Image 1 (cartoon, rainbow, N blue to C red):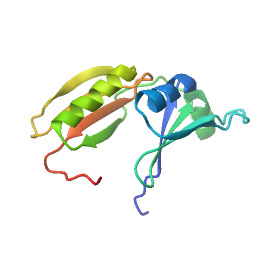
Image 2 (cartoon, helix red, strand yellow):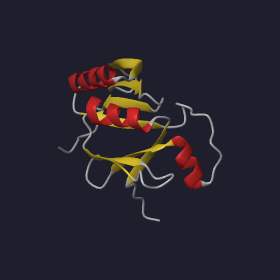
Image 3 (spheres, rainbow, N blue to C red):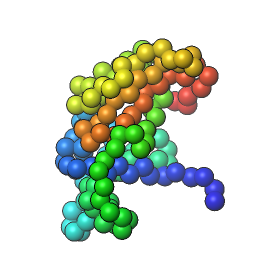
Length: 140
């Protein structure tokens, strides 16, 4: 299998609320919520970098589609990493997320590994890390 991730899907409890957080709060580009005509199909896609999308799908519909039991959400199952080019940019992203309604659970700070990072949770409890790593060069 060639490693290729094209969509990261987050199960959410309130699709409209999550949609507004990512679209208006964080400014992620999207064409809106689609698939409302299907019983379990309403979903929102957001363009990330080339070839990668973020999808928001109601948690109960995701469980139905995957044929797994609906379980309680946990913020410790997964983090989504957003790497930035500087400490200042990390602070800006954390501020933006907080203004959009995120909960800052770990304010950005110097790390033991020589970088700078912090964590926030989106309105559904998905954990994001905002990090500056001095060893990584980012593409523009």
